[in-house]
Length: 112
Image 1 (cartoon, one colour):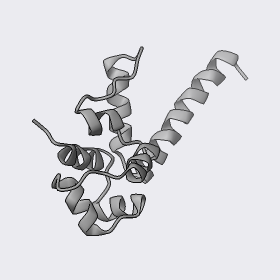
Image 2 (spheres, one colour):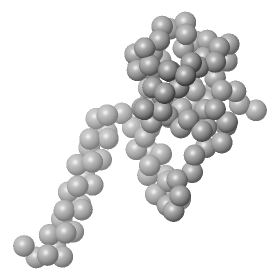
Image 3 (tube, rainbow, N blue to C red):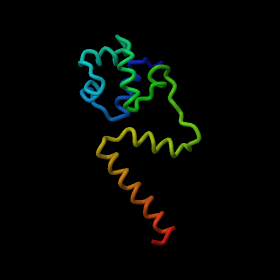
């Protein structure tokens, strides 16, 4: 059975954050992150709020049950999970590619 600390680590890694990135993100010293990830301390309410603001799956961290978006296919869920695991540069590349493909299709339908 996973612990809250191991789920914090898993979510941090899923989002592509190094320990130092995580510490900066929520404003905690290294020893606090270590305590969280080793399940030696519980996350503070303020730290939980900051994690939620940055895309961490809070339901999963707290309960061990992953949040499942409603009304999307497995393929769409996979795309979302992959996107969330990318670094910022990769996300910008994906956004550019997606916009190019989308606008190309719109222009083809409209025949500008």
